[in-house]
Image (cartoon, rainbow, N blue to C red; front, top):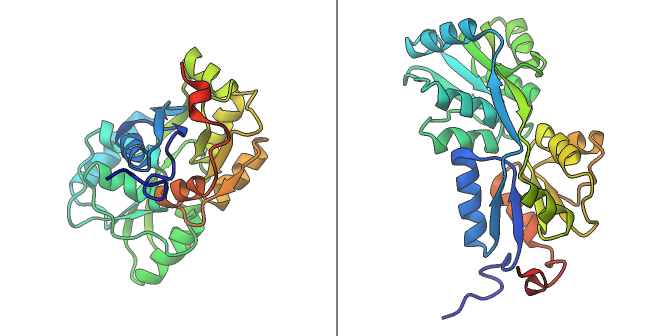
Length: 263
């Protein structure tokens, strides 16, 4: 029995996955299942925090069960936790800002207790945690250097004891000349835009993107960040999940025949 177009709606598509690691591997597998050829090209990575000592202390306290909650607001924070072999005891619950971050946590073996129902932002996460925890709790908020401490401020105002710790700095990762050429000559049919940092790198590293290359944003917030970076988004996933992002891409027809670009 052959696969129908319905079973493999992305047959012939070459799609750029902008993050590596376990998360990137998972996205690549989902794309292959839909018939696409994933091109994993990490555009961002994390660099060590400028205050490694503070992070070391926070992760040691986390392992010791000092915190009731750990809040994680990006998939990159998960990369840092994985690199540091961070131990999260069963007594500490993990809150993830959205499905992408939750999937990244689960991919490396961490259990997620809370993902905001609607608003996948620091404000949305704070609102849900505050509603859930009426008594003061000890919370560790791991964040990037560029992130504003919105979550920590809201939680502190609600009476919680919050340690806001910078876990990493975001840095761009230059792609290979081959991938740059493939994007610029239209051999890559779609690029997944999974965060504002990714959007900025796509704009910077691929100044000449063909008009018929599909740019798919994982949610409205990422789409707004892409717009600020000057990146014209083609489609926005209706839910902030990888499955919704892939589904959004698969509703389009391949811009040109795959064999036309065969090597």
